[in-house]
Each structure stands twice: as structure tokens, then as C-alpha cells.
Length: 258
Image (cartoon, rainbow, N blue to C red; front, side):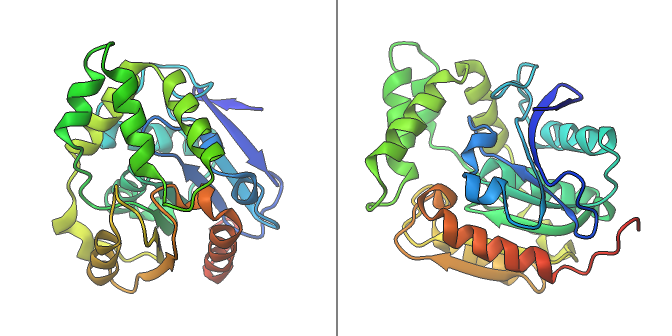
């Protein structure tokens, strides 16, 4: 798989130019594999699932702010010659997508917010737990337990625990600090981009009420809820989320080369 500006990424249909490129941005401690194959390989769409700096197979040490991660995505787009793209982010990735849409709206042709919010507070107990090697495993398990709905397959939770455990603690802490310091609630009415919001009804990390508030505050935003799914909605209900995203991407008025 290719690398651009130090970022490792998965590309599906890279030569498809009649529909907008779609960049998938994972959440805190995640990788491109946080997006299931049904979404990474969305039929007929040009999909780019990226490992953020310090995550997965990307180089770097990770960032400590949403704006810094946003700049990484801008550099990635520039390296690939992408002036505009549909930006879809999960959780922290949604914060990055929001920041990109607010500060660089000319680069975003469509905005997808999956289990995210304009303010991403992190429980202090989690941050404290990750600060010490002896309590890190328990803190990671707490994150996993809160990330999935009651009907989620146990194999998903085991995989999530393994992925988080493979993330360097300093990178995960930096991600959570970036989330904790992120707040663009007052700026949401500025967004004038086609926006899709997706949330599981059993999300305990970014509860449904947050997505409902986003849908009210972002002009023209559409909200789709997924019954029984938790925070990792795209892994719990991959086909459902893939179908919703496909319809959204196809609805975007995109002129190649403009």
C-alpha cells in the first residue's frame, strides 16, 4: 500500500475520477482498519483510508491537537493532488473533519461525521489511567467497554483491545488530549457544506443527543441513526453504514477537475 507525506493509506478505485475522492479519518488510537472493508472498498467510489501520524504504519509521533492533525490531512491531500474531497471522520476523526470544513471549506465537498461531536471531552479517569503503565491495561479495557453496543460481537471487542494495546501510549494520550481541547460548537452555523451525521442509538462515548445537536446547528445537515449500535457503529453495522455513506456520496454535486 502507498505512502504520502509519511502517511500510510489504503486506496480503492484510485483511478475513479467521475465521483469525488473520499478520505476516511479514524478516531483516537485507531488506524485505517477502524473502517471495515465494506466502507474502505465502497463500490464505485474512490476511497482513501489513512493512518494518521504515529498510527498504524504511518511514521511520526502523533499530534496533540486537532488543528495539527488537520494540517496532516491537508498535506496528504496536497501530496496526492486532491484539491477537494469528501471528508468522513469517526470520533476524533470527525473533529478533524469538522476543523477542516471550518478552516478550509474550499477543500471539502462533503462532510461525514460518524459518532462524533463539536466538543470531545474525555473522562479524566481515562487520562489518569493511561498516565501509568500499571493502570494502562485497565484504562484501555474501559475504553473498549464503552465503545461498543450491548449486541456487539465479542470478537470486535477483542480486536479493539489488541489494536489499542499496539498503539504507543504516548500517541493515545496525545489523541485524547487533542480531543479534550477541541471545541468548535459556537462555529457550527458557519458550515455551508453537505453534511451527513451518523450515530448509534447505544453510543455511550458520544451519545445520540450530541449528534442530534449537530444536526440542528449545522445548516441542512442530515442525521441517520443506527439501532443498537454503539460508538464503533461502522464496525458493528458495516453494511448499514456503507449503504448510508454510498447514498450520501452519490448525492454530492461534484464536478471533476473543479
